[in-house]
Image (tube, rainbow, N blue to C red; front, top):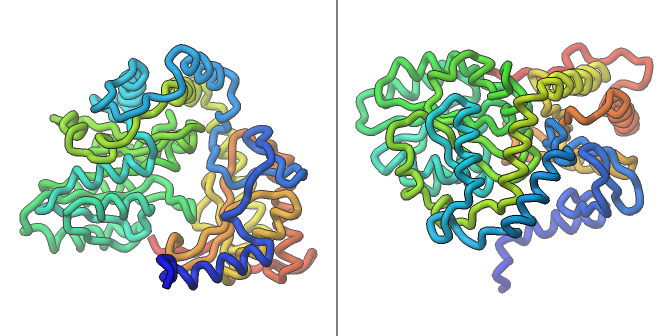
Length: 414
């Protein structure tokens, strides 16, 4: 018996994808040309699945800062900050993030995944309670598993169910830590954060963590995310996020006003035992944060592009998520249809993402797109045309000229 026998069913499915030429795990670009285009097997491909929301991966100023820092300080730190010390850029970035979010403290992690892994496992101890939205990202669930707190899930985007869960825990000892997201990465829906904040205020020893990974740089007058857009920043105790979306890099962070915040550097294992970010990444992220703050036109263009794609797909008759955002997902009737649709688009020159359960809510099979400020209106329209052609060929939407379905927007209970 092989060590990998336990994965036999998954291995069989993987082989089927390979044989069908529809394996999203095996895409290897020849080259990437820009935030919106790449070359795959000699064919130019339009990128519509990269989370590169502001298109800053090819920004000249961001690249220049990364190159200069690499030349001055080398390619890496070769260890954690506890073991090898901090470079000046690490503290500068933490201070810049704290200032941007109007917080006293900031802490940088090597990935966004580790930010959630580290913060959630440290904030709630064995006598405490983590209260998670049921549709939380895998990194949130894994952070809960790494720690020793008792975990309670509440119905996705339901303030009533959150209140019900907290009411049951009202007289139970221990702190309660609520965790929600700004924009959920599968369907692109936002949390009812104002209502969640009101529930949180009703219970003592209760804290609110908001993961703004997909909403930083997207929502709010200054791009600080859903908490800013909803006007409840004062009710959010900890903001967690990533550099790999709007900031176009890699890494994660947490900012807070919590007294004694720096003890987290000692008790957060993913921070203590992971090599710190290289100088080039730190410098690029600092510059990308500067671009985010000084170029609001990027956020406006992103919103226009997101609305254009969302409304265009809905008008064709596709079932899409409950609200427009840079994450635009279309519901497929089955995983097999999702893979076939994805492959058809890719072979035609359009790269998107396949998302399947258990990573998706309600067991949905999704064809997930993510929009960038760098996309032109013509590129968005071309993508819509490709969706239309594939959808009609597969019988997923009405033929050209036929009446589309009345309710193309996915109804998700909030």
